[in-house]
Every structure is written in C-alpha cells, then in structure tokens.
Length: 207
Image (spheres, rainbow, N blue to C red):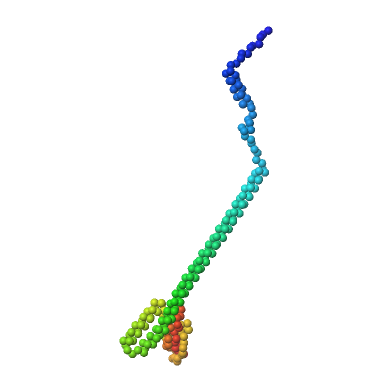
C-alpha cells in the first residue's frame, strides 16, 4: 500500500503570494458593485412630451414678455413724438407771437410818425421863407427815411384806377368821360407796409 504524499508546510512569504493571487482571481469573477456599474435609464415618450410642453410654455411666456416690452417701447416712442410735436408747436407760437409783437411795435411807430409827416407837408406849402422851408424839408426827409427803414411805402393813387383796397373816395369830380373811375387828386396820402394797409389814401375820383 502506497503512502500519501506529505504536504510540506509553506513559508510565510509563499502564503502571502498565494492569498494575493486568489484575491485577484476573485475580483475578476465578482460582479461590479452599485458605484462601479453605470445604470442605463430609458426615456419614455411621456417624458419627451412633457419636456416639449414645458419648452412650448417657456417660449409662449417669452413671446408675451417680448410683446409687452414692444408695447412699452411703442408707448414711450409715441409719448416722445407727442412731446416733440408739442414743443415744436410751442416754439412756433412763440416765434409767431414775437413776430407779431415786433410788427405791432413797428406799426405803432409808423402810425405816430405819419401824422407828423402830414403836418410837415402842410407846413412846407405855407412857409414863404426859403431858408425855413429848407430846414423843414430836411425834417421831412428824416421822417421819410424813418418810414423807409421800416419798409413803409406811399400808396400810389393819382391817375390810377380807383381801388377800394388802397383808396378811400371822399368825393367825386366831373371828368371828360375817358377817365371815369380814375383818381383825380389825393387829399391825404396813404401808406402800406408790405400788403398791410397802414392808412388808405383819401382821394377824389372822376365820375
């Protein structure tokens, strides 16, 4: 009868190597743990529809906000345009009123000068002394110069057709039939400033 082979005891170093090899083999065969294995998660159609609905809702909300911002911007633009129009109207009114005030001041000066000029014209016709007459004529020239400065013109009348816009008939006189309706003579001179009549010429008209 054959005797069993006696197993020799391993050294401490051999035991450690054997245990290490055993652990490696077991780690290869063992299934991965929860932290090491990636878990695949399936996405359902319901999840996709929910996500699309949320995106649509967000887009609609953004559209509403954009519409409100546009409306606000439009309101601000209209307000600015209205303010600018009001300011332009105000500036135009101020300019027009300034022009009117200036014209009124000019008219006041002109209306105060014209009667003085009338008196000077009458005085020149009555003065016999030539030296005195020349002095008065110089005054008359100064008054005419003042009216010219304000662009005032004498209204032409004698020999022209009577025009009620520029002439005021104070009487009529007999004519030769060919000059009917024409101005025979000027009783009092008239003056105008552009198209504005300061004083119509008072005239005598042929019948």
